[in-house]
Length: 137
Image (tube, rainbow, N blue to C red):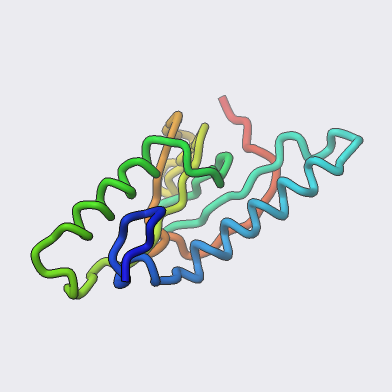
């Protein structure tokens, strides 16, 4: 069965990645708290993803109007038009999209990588939290 929006065959359109959904829900909850915060105390607060290689902080993108969403839609279209539509998915994790991402490796926390846009596959995330952006120069 094909999902009209994503043009993905059922084996892609019907999958649910609980880790990705949970992190996106946390981002939605934090956004709601920020909107209700009149003190400005939560202004610099973001979701922070913990991985095996370091932490990633940034603003989680919840809309579908970005480069990575376009890539996923193209992937789904290619899969939908593949000769064997009943294939078996491997590496079946969703991705979390962040803007203004900062990657801080555990091996060298004084070094960080700044990325305007970043997509991380959820299988690389071991946990998440929220808090103020770390400002180290």
